[in-house]
Length: 170
Image 1 (cartoon, rainbow, N blue to C red):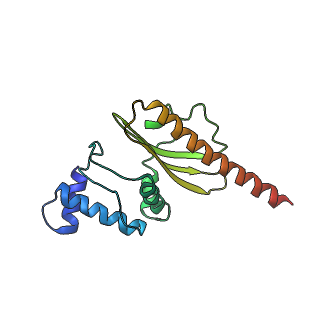
Image 2 (cartoon, rainbow, N blue to C red):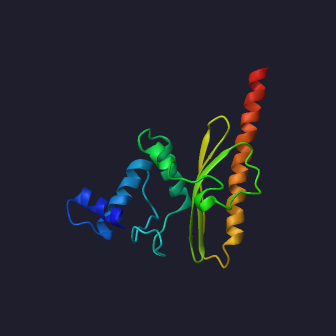
Image 3 (cartoon, one colour):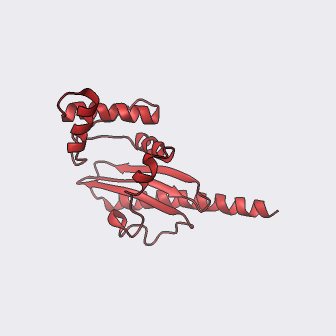
């Protein structure tokens, strides 16, 4: 919350608030993604308000912007846990990730479950992803879906790497 208000102050020169911080964040998202921040609602800086909104496609574009940024990208990557760590401590234990690395962050409030991050293939190709479920009677089915999506991306990257390796030997 303080960081959001600080952003608002730094950009406008006025006392930081959720309102000018939210507008500043929207402007930064537009600058980084090159697209309008349609559907982005920043109610506060906590991430715990039911009024905060972002589409999975915008979140994916936002994540992709860090992959192309040699300054903030590595710092951002360092904040993301991998399976067995942090919020991914119990995630992906029974999933075949096909030699890929997963770095992601979860989000949860009652009725909402999110998983967003990156899948990196053995050859270094990286895909950003975001799976967000809203108005959920139970979170567990959504968590399974999130893991299935990540496993499907990993399977694709694993097969691409295998095809490339085999093609390179001929």
